[in-house]
Image (tube, rainbow, N blue to C red; front, top):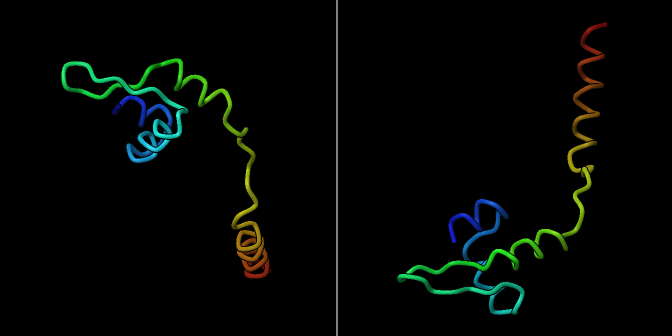
Length: 72
C-alpha cells in the first residue's frame, strides 16, 4: 500500500475508503494489504485534470506593487 500512497499522493485512510466504495480492490498477500494495479491506473486516469489555481494571486500582486513602489 505504501507504493500506492506514494504514486497517488493519497493517504492510507483514503485508499481504504476508495476500496470500501468499490473504486479500488485490495488483496492480502503474506499478511500485507496490496492494491490491484489496474484500479490505481483507472483512478489516476479518471481523475480531474490539474489546473493552476489563483489562490494567493491577490497577495502576490500586492507584494509586487509594494516592491515596485519601494524601488521608486
